[in-house]
Image 1 (cartoon, helix red, strand yellow):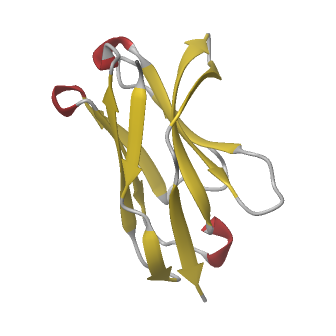
Image 2: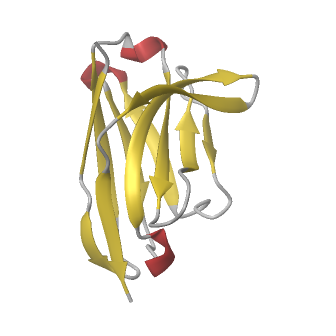
Length: 121
């Protein structure tokens, strides 16, 4: 049974930083592609960043240069380092296990419970 548990969210002032973590279990983590999504109230879930099983990364234009996705296969954990946070980054952030088809990341139906990030102006 795949389980993804996010942590690290919280309240931060604009310009601040947070690091989100997602601990995975019940899956061969090192062979899987992973991603972070976010969902603001009344919005759909949006892909923020993804990382392949060999460490290649992609970031949404809205976070490029500010957020960095990474993984530690020894700890079965994927991270999202978020710097220079803006009020518009306020969302619930979700970890996902999915797969790449070429350069396109497609989410499987494996999601964490989410962690709230709130950025005050």
